[in-house]
Image (cartoon, rainbow, N blue to C red):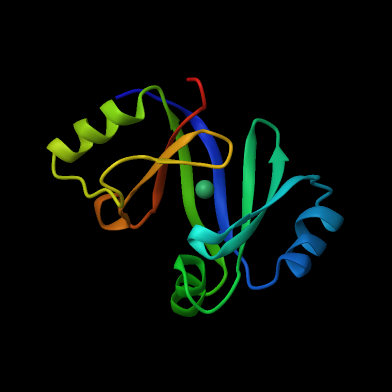
Length: 136
Ligand code: CO
């Protein structure tokens, strides 16, 4: 498989507005977009840091993966997303060697990109998001 770059780092926060007081007001990073992802029970602010994004994620309620992460681990780095050339081929290759993926098939994000996750137990404790850009 071919990993092209780190695309973004996902950070779980309790309160997006409060987090932006640090990441935006203090560090001076600009919020490029804010999205609500009902499917994953969260809203996210996307900030660009050079070629890499930060995805600040706040849960919409007590359910969902971000809420569960916060309850278990508190605020902090939730996942690291890497761009791969061919996500389907990458998933197949990883699965063959016994790596556990979260979804059977890659999912389609709001922006048309494809994504899946490598389970942290297969990646030394890191939840790794695999993504392939739309049209890539
Ligand atoms: Co992400």
